[in-house]
Length: 114
Image 1 (cartoon, one colour):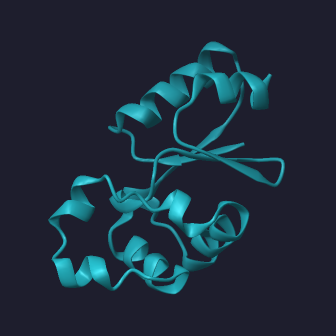
Image 2 (spheres, helix red, strand yellow; image 1 turned 60 degrees about the horizontal axis):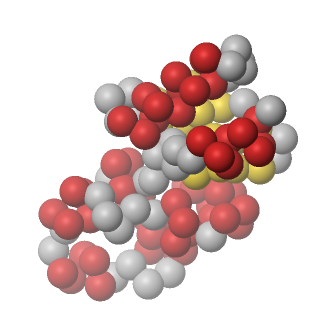
């Protein structure tokens, strides 16, 4: 299991605390330090759809110009923007058993990880 996120993100912190409390082993991938590849973002997009991993509620999204926002109409454009602005990726993204879970959702975690 790999948890992708940013250490100071509240949702990432809640997710990792939930996993630790239940003694579920995971590796942590910090976007800010280790980055993320287009291949990984495309893989997630195939599993969940780029719209689910792309965070239009983020501060980063709101800080973009209307032209930059309007240009995000496809997976290719979204991936390009996520490569440039890692904080626009919803957090955390948890990979396990060939699947992904996006965001912090205790009920879903109970279902998926127990």
